Image (cartoon, rainbow, N blue to C red):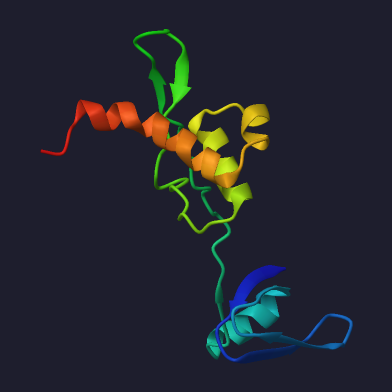
Length: 132
């Protein structure tokens, strides 16, 4: 058997049991080698790569707090950007927990309170680099 990807809009062949088969463009199919040779020769299929390397997952950024010596995660804005103010409360809750707030305390907060708590987390960083 050979693995191929259908290159034309449609590929048609007869399987070893004599049953007509159809596959659409982009589908990956397993076909007998003689059928693969024929479909390849007319451009109906192309050889499918059998090796696909998985993409590595990014390592989380870990920062050691200079005051407590405990690791705390810094949020990578590309992985979990700050939600828009109009976003639903559950999204804000997930974001707050991802930022390091306690899930139990966040679950009892309103959306406005969660946003305020996150703003407090950001406040020390803004004081270090004042605007002006």
